Amino acid sequence: MKPQLQIISKPTAARSGPKPVSEIELTIKEYLLTKRQEQCTAGTLEKYAFRLDSLAAWLAERGASDLADISKLLLREWGATLDPTWQPATMRHAVTIVRGWLNWCAAEGLIEAGLAAALRVPKVKSRVQRTLSDEEIQKLLDACADTPAGSRDAAIVSLMVDSGLRASEVCRVKESDLIFDFPLKKKKVNFIPTIGKGGNEEPVYFGNETAGRLRAWLRVREAWPGVKNLFVSLGGNTPRQPLGRNGLGALLERLGKSAGVPGVSPHSLRRTFAVLLDDSGHTTRQIQALGRWSDIRMVERYTAAMRVGNNYHAPMDRLEK
Image 1: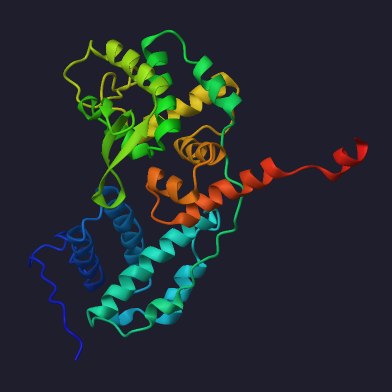
Image 2 (image 1 turned 135 degrees about the vertical axis):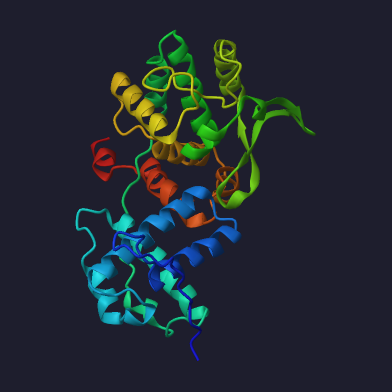
């Protein structure tokens, strides 16, 4: 027998009282609590909530408020009406989240098994990923002026290329996280013990050139001792406040335009980290470990096309010689 969820709402005398919570909405809240118990990050939970709340609103518009109202036909209709302007990866992400919720509901005995199969995960076409060349990285560094903002920007670019840090990780780094010249058996290393995806603490390493740029930024940053985060905004509406992901993205985009380098973003710098390690002789497994990718296929996707290009010798050029 299917377990019944009890829906609790406060009785109100006036029609303008609080809107009763539907069974679907209640189940979504319970699912999010389960994901929180599984130690999903706040950012992941926010994405789950956004996608599932959007689904609940879409279902409510079609008169579906109880789990029993959800049918394969209705799910297929939802899947077919996703915003056509979305990128395939965005559609895939939305469908995967909804399928995860449906599978959880089935495992809990709240809906019939197999409903999730009504949603087909869109295929994402493989594309050559944007990475930066050595010359483009140098252009970015040269475009960093001899100012507090320029010192910060040079430290950010250098750290991201050296370490492969994600945007959210860069924004979370604190001054106290930096560890310089830590002695190991064969050499001294610089690293940051960062909290990555899944809540795991893992070291990310950076070289001496980056260490020098970070130390230069720390000398500038001494003027604002009250802020714990390493990187702060230096303008806009929130000066001297921790730099956020949107601020980081805007900063890199502006720097790219100033340097004449297109497509500069946190993602392109992380991909560049992987490709440069590949060029220097690191194995795919080593790059996966250093970049903290859970799936080695991501590393292969970033590096394979570049490796083929580096090894390509044009037949016509050989004939001309």
